[in-house]
Image (cartoon, rainbow, N blue to C red; front, side):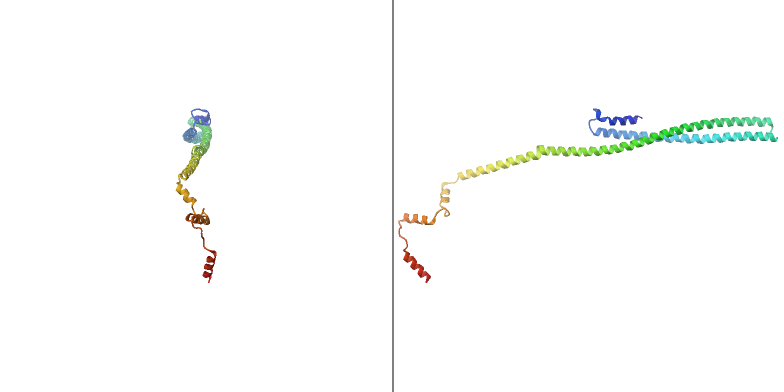
Length: 250
């Protein structure tokens, strides 16, 4: 059948330059299944028609066979009546011959109809085998199509996912992280540079003030230097300080 030739070409689709995408075998398979279903419907129609002819041939053969038996019975009855004197012998024989002719005609017709019935039943068996084969192939290719469509969905999803991952790794995330890292390093270096410039820009007054900070100047040394500057060389007598201390204690 042509449908099987078309389906066979689907199996060789990968070797043809016209089929370079996975969607093409799917479309061809779908079309092949539609064609197979059309052939299945036609085969079922033909099967029903041939079965009907086989049944009719059987019924007509049976009817012709019964007529042949009936004509034979009639011929025998005519001869019996002639024997009994109920009918003239010549007339009985003439009618008996006519009945036997009819018997022969019906017998031949029954035989022909029986042969037709046998031929039709053979065709029915062949058509029934074809119908079963087409049904099995339709079921097979529908399962293949479902599997193929599922593989297309999986492969498409996998391809898109891998493509996205490849783009992320190659062009997006890694590159973006590298750019962010460079920017952070640049900002840190720039901040340090501004800090150095700020330190260099401090005034001399700020340095003096920092140097005169009490945390860095010894109090006794500062007092001695101040007394020397003022010409004060005297200090309080120890007795006075002792008496003052005793007074305070009393």
